[in-house]
Length: 198
Image 1 (cartoon, helix red, strand yellow):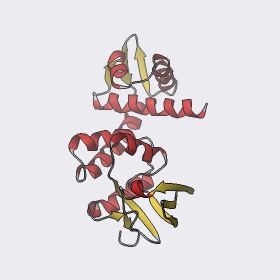
Image 2 (cartoon, helix red, strand yellow):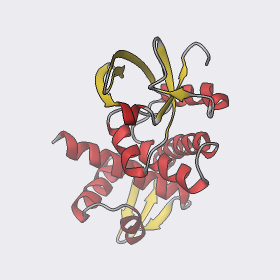
Image 3 (cartoon, rainbow, N blue to C red):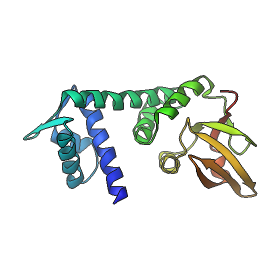
Image 4 (cartoon, rainbow, N blue to C red):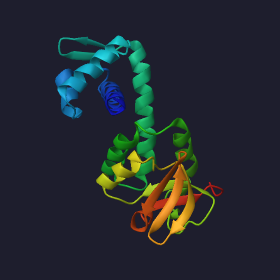
């Protein structure tokens, strides 16, 4: 199933990030406490990472291989870039949590976009006020649950967005090639910056 393979990918990335944060070696129980998934997903992720040559697993100890260190450093670097962007908008704790949510869904292009718009972090307008052309998403003012919902739809800071139609109760916009409807009250919480300004 596609959903299962996506969860497995995320778990594998989390394992690698945790290992590099902990100097390349931890007990399996530590990872199980950090990543809240079933034992079967955890075991499957560890087995796959071992087959891919990214880690070594001996009894209860998990250790990064040399190639695993390079992969894990890439994942950690992406995490830190995202966290850095959000530090100016959210608290340190929130920035860290947001980074954990979106690090698995964000492309290198979006990371580059975040760098471009980082000086405009607090200068965006509400999506509801934005009328035409393309814009970058700069922030989403929402609770964690709603933020995760936005991310699942591809609404992520740094992504380009284009309004297609304005309706009395909301907007239809295009992001990542998909058309999405969003109610006016939620569109007000998404901040954007005109693409040309950035």
